[in-house]
Picture 1: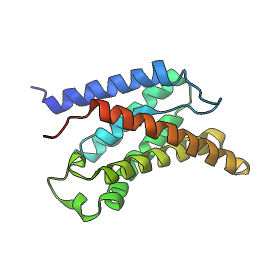
Picture 2: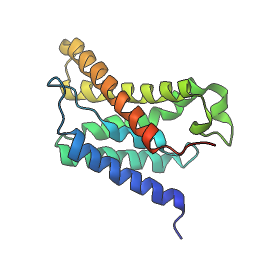
Picture 3: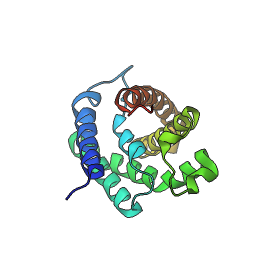
Picture 4: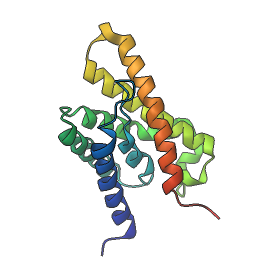
Length: 169
């Protein structure tokens, strides 16, 4: 029998890919800002799950978005990067609390959750735009696109997180 955890992650995976491909890939604020909300899957994924399967799912997530966006595996490379760096980022943001066996992101402060999400998005976008532009001569363009898109993505991800999160009582 498949557990509830797997079903929720499958639904999140499919819905985030569909929302990204059908809605957010069509948007272009100011001609270059294209929010990437599918990163929420990597934020919501359970902390203490098998790391190899998490990196594999991250690859499939990025490759699925690449397939529909025609971006030649740039999303896959960026999602694998943040999936690999996620434990390091979590240790940086949450400190020693990350080491506990019963650690959950929902039990941390909102500032820590915001910082964790912001770092995931920023690292993803820096890798994504560095690979997309692939020229250090355009370093300022990479930074401009990464920071502006990160800001738009962060706002939308916070909205989605607040809309679809389970409230603690």
